[in-house]
Structure formats: C-alpha cells, structure tokens
Length: 278
Image (cartoon, rainbow, N blue to C red; front, side, top):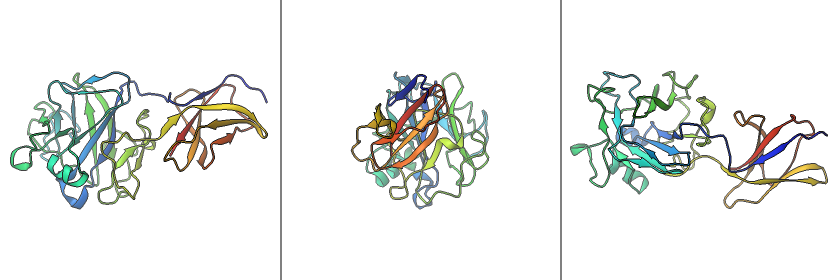
C-alpha cells in the first residue's frame, strides 16, 4: 500500500468563514402556539462577534409587507462569544415555561408577554416597514441571519422558500421537534447540513449542537493501518469521515461501538480523517 501524507484531525473540522450560523430552529411549536417558536445561532469562530445592527427573522426580502413575517434587529452592544449559543425566542415567558430557562433575546413586548430580564429585538424598518411579527409557517418558510452591512450570513428553509435547494421536508417533524444543524462548525448551504432533533428530546435549545470531534491516532494493527481514539463519556457510537480537501466529507464507517477502525486498502494519495462521537 502506498501512503502519501495521511493526516488525522480531531478538533479541526472545516469552518465556515462567516463564523456565525443558524444552528437550530423550532417552527412547529409545542401545542400550535406561535409564541413557542424560537431560533438559535452559534459562533463557530475563534473571536467574539459584535451583533450591533445584525438582524434575524423570516422576512425573505427587504421592504417586505407580510404581517406574519418580520426582520428583527439585535440590541446595540449585543455580542456572541466564540463557541457560544444564543436563542431568540418569540416569547421569553412561554420559552421559560417550556424549557426551564430564559432565552438570550425575545421578540415579544408589552401585553404579548415581555420578560423584563430578557432584551427585546426590535423590527427593522427597512426590511420590515409594516412592523410584522414572526409567525413561521409549518409548511413553507425560512430564517435569515443578516449582518450590519446587509449581507445574508446564513439562511435555512423548509418547503421551497429559497436558500437550501431542495428545502427541508416540512412534514417530517413532530409537534415541538426542531431542526438542528448536524455540524455547526461547517456550513455548505445544503439540506444535508440539517437533521431533526432526536425524537426522545424533541429539541435542544441553548446547547452546542452537532457531533463531538476529537483527536485520533494511527498505528499498525494486526489487520493493517488502524485509527484509534479515546472513548468519550456519553457516546454510544462513533463514525469515521474522510475528505480529500477538508471541504466535502464522506461517511466511511457508521455506528462503530469500538474505538478502533481499520483503514480501507485503497485510499487517495492525500486524505484526511476525522472521528465523531454520536
């Protein structure tokens, strides 16, 4: 077997240049109560991001006029630290009743259920001149994250409403079940980036989503070159992925219950591997 630069990586997956991604969305809210909807973002970079002037919402175009869509502005001075998850809920009181803690921000105000401990996001008069509200359709809608320079940093959609093509299947989730980014450290703008939250928990707001990455080592085993890694607490299975250029990753081994994996006999000249704990 000819080996030319076999590289193993653990905590170094490909990272989206934008750093911020939409990491989890609940649009099919618990009990069909629109106030239970929420959007989560994650900073997969190494530096804090100033969110002053950034916007988030389901208004798909500037100057939109739908009263059931909105684009909301983060409060001045808002930041998100590297590795931090933040949640924007439509109603902090409803969110707290469902999950037992307060979100980072809320869209509600006044009689709609404003919690004074939670900063409010306000309507962007340019994107949303009619002052609509976020009311994400269960059948066909999307979420946008827009920076202060009016650039779309990230977007996801279900149905056929732009962004991902095709969009996520809007009929797949159960009541109260969210869609999660599989690996929040990468962003390929494809539906393959997303999966439903586990059916037993329905959603995981406020938690760093995605698989765990960790270092593996290569050694010469009895059956040939073998990857070996340290067991991770709480992991039930492991999977091994391979890439030739750190952009596209293919699953090479799934649902491994051991912490070793024998490499295939035939490999590209230069190849990268990573091990994920599920």
